[in-house]
Amino acid sequence: MNYIFRCILDTKEDIIRDIRIPSSADLEELHRAIIKAFGLPGGELAAFYRVNGQWEPVDEIPLMDMGLEGGKKEMKDYRLPDLFVQTGDKMLYVYDFLKYWTFYVSLLKIEEAGTGDTAPAVIFSKGKMPGEAPERHFESIGEQPGGEDPFAGEPGFDEGLDFDEGLDPDDFASY
Image (cartoon, rainbow, N blue to C red; front, side, top):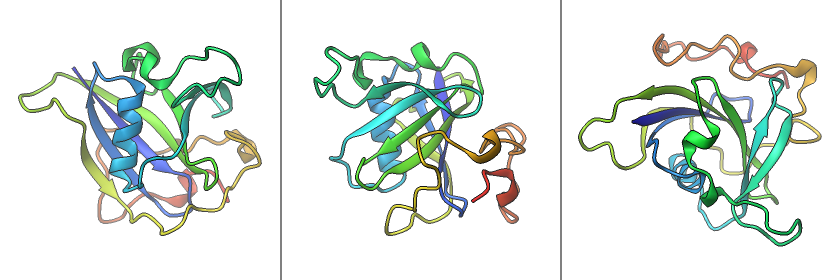
């Protein structure tokens, strides 16, 4: 099985990558696939955050345990099916806590694996990455005015996107 994730950078522009990754992968492999898909340099700390329906963080899953909370599970300890059970399941991903690149990650589709589908791959790309991390739009991770969902009104994977027209910025959190 393969998972297809939509990853959206928290910025005013539409910067989106859809990533196909084997369901046998762990969260650390998804982390590496995201930084590669968005052209980030690697080597920085990062974390995934389980979220509620309003994208408010419920639990942090760090790249590595820094010993502050004693024995916290790391990304490598979670297989994707442990966290993503059905389409629409979502998490926040933050890369580089000094620059604070923030991404909305949602499971778009679970599909049968084809031959040659053993490595993560970008299967859709929209928008150019900025040279610097965008300004943080919210005071804390997941805090959004009105609890808006960045995926609200966005077409699903099977519905396809009109690549010529792009996405309507009003479908995302207001800035």
